[in-house]
Length: 130
Image: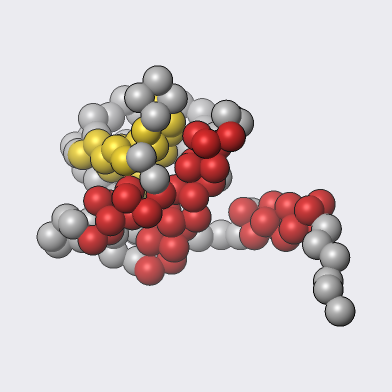
């Protein structure tokens, strides 16, 4: 007996999980985007410090790095680019020594996002980082 897959149900599960609280990785964060003209998935790595409230702050200024609202201008530590999600995972997670990712859930999140970005690149759909 084959189970019917309901895409709306799967989206609802993902949407709910996207709203859960997460701990920030002291190793930094990544901004993921597509360079469609070059056919690349890109990930900019930024360092950060986690303060005693659990908020990411700019190491240079101490300013809170917010997801929305006031934008803090920062310079990325490293720009990673690749043609596939797997290639980007190798470049971001396996090659740098020591690995800048210090939490397994962060590595899993990046893998999921890289796959989503690759799908959007291949299919010409919009990619918005979760």
